[in-house]
Length: 484
View 1 (cartoon, helix red, strand yellow):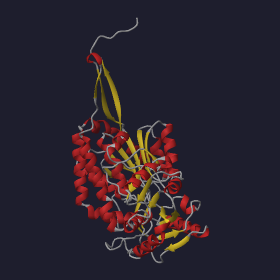
View 2 (spheres, one colour):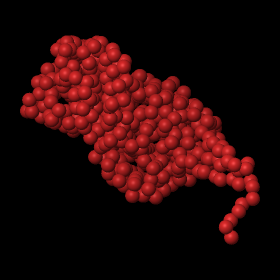
View 3 (cartoon, helix red, strand yellow):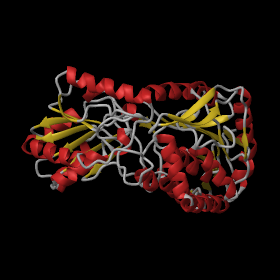
């Protein structure tokens, strides 16, 4: 095995194993090879992790924000120094090309640790003067133990996006990665310890859905943050709400990307590639409904096919590879089922649509044209490299169609008319919007969705509101009167 960790879990500052838990085989998506074997958390392991987080929280919160921030920034530096090794592990874990993981995964995690580390010392309340010298002040306080539940597409990034703001605010964390990509979060825990974090502030437990369910409903937990599908999100949100826990839900989407006649076709094609085929299409915010105004439809499709011919499909550990496998055989099967539905319902297959023979879970990037709004491939999240291209005539028409979805994670527009661009994004029913670009995710900007796509925001100063709460204190300096 090529990536076997010391043990399955990281709790209270050290690796912990319990082989009574269900075995988890970690599969390298490029070959189907089992590269590590871990064990799902038993009730004893879950209890141990929550106890460790609960025990460490008060002392961690009692430190100054500057002290906490110094540890997070040191962890960011270590993560950047080890970017190559972390990127190789991420590629083994997910199958994403090293060309991608080396610039978008551990680096993004390090950015989050650095950003919230820098912000930690500035987290203060405010003074509110009242009449007669009286005043009110607020205190920003930690929530307590925060549970993070990760998805399999960006395991390092998601672990850090959830841990960094939680820790900056004085919370402690128990993080459960996806059972398909369990390796990277353990390295995040190692690095935080090396950076000087007290034992127990960031714990990692492995497992399937029942482990997540046990964490979400435990009374020691104050906050739950999930990245995952809408059906899973609804279940977790309901379970957390029953216990009045704080929540952040970063869920799926079926996001629109609108390309007007006056757009720069080359840039629009680049946006469509980034919004459909990066990470082999396994990105929640992908703009998989590409509305192209009829005047440039054929030019757009022609240039898109030419660009896709340049994709280098192969060993994701080869730095020249730009398009890797799906994460699992199961996910590949799901995506190929959608390809067949697209054909059956009358969409025109203009590129790809085939599995790639040999080892691993590969398929070609796929493009359907002449897609209509009622087709399954235009309604349901596929989570794979399948682009639907839809025609449109007018702005009013396309806006109504773009918003006709239960989802609201992201949306993008390509046009050289900036007045129209701002008008369009104002009309989008989506939490994260793009003008002449797509899928940028700097830590300085809030990220999240609306409607069925989520609750709350990750990253930026907005995340602080979701990992802390305000206490209001009224102070009277004058005499106090009462009616009797």
